[in-house]
Length: 266
Image (spheres, rainbow, N blue to C red):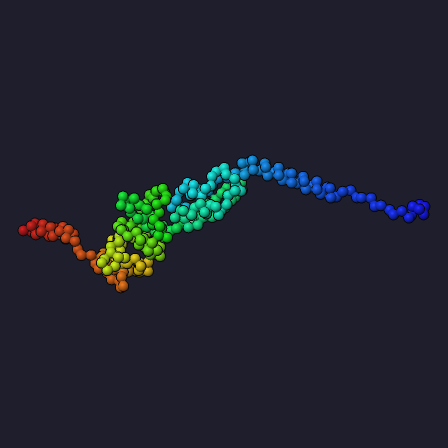
């Protein structure tokens, strides 16, 4: 190398283009990602294939799914819990609903309903569930095969139903199951007087605002009643028991039997 060559600065040779390779890889990645997204959204795996409902008693599965706005075949990723909850707000029997998505294509609705505390008999004889939140449930077509709750037969004050439902919800299921019928029996001095006909043959007379607290003691009160006696249990400011008066028709057979015995002796 001559002295002249030594004075010329050396130019570095560029290395193979790494930046170009990175751009190419990124473009290929985006291409395949877009391709996979297109294929996914065109495939059955992107659709809702099955809808399951759990926790429902008051409503049928069909009623809940229809109210939710969910349909088979809709976009799986376009299902939002907040939208489903908003759609189901009008259902008075639903306290809360949560949504679970399971790939591929399964949507599960988990429903929390208000407790059903009694049946209200309408003037036409139709029975409607009374819920713990005070609503009379009329927005369901589910048929009730068994009347397994207290039956409200006579009630002409709808504004008192929320107070009654609150009182009944405070009772244990064991105590509530002993109530057969409920009637509103107001007096000139108290419009909240009610009469409860119990399954064991007794009656309970009380007021709505004291019912939840005082009827809870019913099993213990009954144990204090002499065996075989039936009557009226008053749960007012104080509690007492009044035995049923013997009915004339109950005495008549005994009287006839006595007369027949006397005739035979004669």
